[in-house]
Length: 130
Image (cartoon, rainbow, N blue to C red; front, top):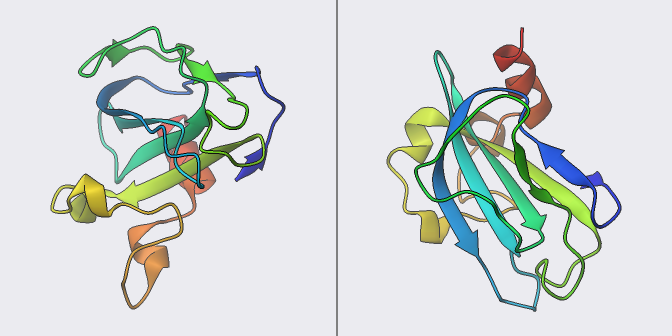
């Protein structure tokens, strides 16, 4: 989680395709608006952005270029009723492609070592922008 004030823009640091778009209205610690992207080219993890405002300017399946706006940091209760921040999560490619999104949790998944399934998102993004 990265503490950011509401309304700040979240931009994409690499080219990607939007593969999941969820407007979660759960106000008891939900996702708020959640976007999952599949980076272009050689990648090892899908990247998730959550707790965004519900003002999204693209559709599921959209191809986004580096620098595109993913969204704005949302405010409670529409951001999942949590403090204002960006939830940034990497999900290992092999695991993601076999899981059901309804089982996705922002805190991990029942596994022996969640670091293998959910690697450090900043390290994963740094691989994509080299």
